[in-house]
Length: 263
Image 1 (cartoon, rainbow, N blue to C red):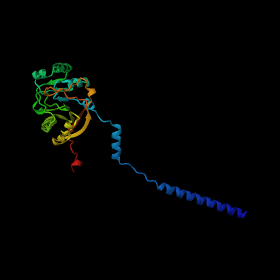
Image 2 (image 1 turned 90 degrees about the horizontal axis):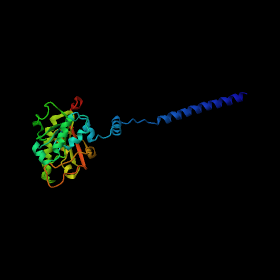
Image 3 (image 1 turned 180 degrees about the vertical axis):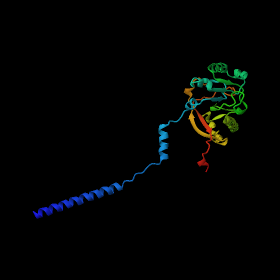
């Protein structure tokens, strides 16, 4: 009997030791695992990319409370846009030509103008897009626009280096004159063909030079503006440029630095 008790006690002690050893190995294994927390800023970037799709030109325009359109020529783009916005009264369309010159240049301009005015949109003539600050008599003095649109600007002269420089100067003057009319969170939109010549204008760099912030470049959705017919600023023998392969540059006012950023 004494031997059995001793053997049993030995077995029990071995079992206890085995349990302790298994606990130790378990704890050591657990300690080998390291939890790495991802950077919150990286997670935020991923979340933004997956949840928020890229805004289109139409998306930007439909968020605007007041829209100024310059260089409109036959007003066909404004007419097409007026079908999309809830209230055409928010549209302020302007062209460079006088009323008489407009009728002589573009056969459909008079009818488009009439349709816009009947729907409540505002239409102006003889407005220089590079001197918008001098046209305060056209619209209410205190008005600020959430969107200022200039589609396919071009001074003429083909695709030469001299023409490029003239067009860059025109864009620079336009942005400078448009910025004071922009609301705090408003955007300026310039649409150009997506070709080598128009890319050479370097719109983002011009925006930076005049103190604006280049936000994005989005596709121009031709299918969204079916009534829009691009026409040449100076009527010529050649056909008007095609708008299928076009992009819209989006620019905003510079953000004001916070107190922390200034320090």
